Amino acid sequence: MLQQTPVDRVLPRLDDWLTRWPTPASLAAASPADAVRAWQNLGYPRRALWLHACSVTIVEKHGGHVPSDVETLLTLPGVGPYTARAIAVFAFGAHEPVVDTNIRRVIARAVHGHSDQGPPSTTRDLADMDALLPGSEVSPAFNAGMMELGALVCTAQSPRCEACPIAGLCAWRAAGYPLDDRPRRAKQARYEGSDRQVRGVVLKKVRESTGPVTRGEITPLWPDALQLDRAIISLLDDGLIVSSGDGLSLPTD
View (tube, rainbow, N blue to C red):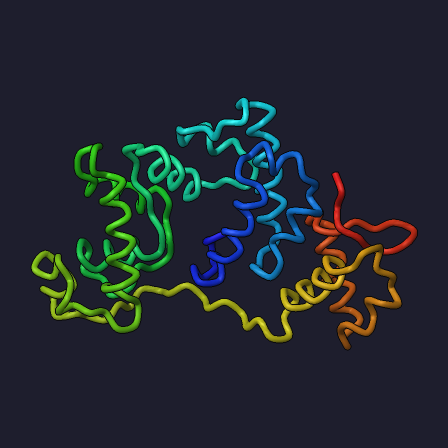
């Protein structure tokens, strides 16, 4: 839920989710439609389908127990390198490097002397963090601490260098805070008027309906018919909605 979504938006939904489905088995017993409805407006709703599919796999292949090692976690639907390592480290205390945007920024500045972390590279980023990890008994706390350092102190726009506990070791500070001339990642396109917004409008209508939604009900939702069709097709392709003779609805199995 936290991937690309602020904590303050996630916490209420997480509480509701865990109250309803406290175990993988309880979520696996629900339908994909239930998961999509419970996801509501968190964004990137495919994550709801992945989480449901992940729970089904955990029940069918792992006896209802979440795997504890990175290699096995990576076999679960929708689980990538970051999520696998985060679960292994923070849930099971594994001695593994975890790398997010905040950690990459701290390492770019403190170790490499760059103002910006530049384009991501999984191999390089994990190697950088792995080289910094202390003993296995404290590596989960170290991973968490590096995340918090980047989120609260070594921020992207206004770093609080005077409050930084590693300011004396920072290569960027020692070099006089040089600006980075490396290429930056392109900014995400605006949400307003985007296909993402149209997808959200359509999915909200289907999610809140008690039955199939007809084309006549969908058409007034967005003025651009071609963009509306494109959004519907992409939602169908992602498995977030299904089409029948009666209209559009959420997947049931």
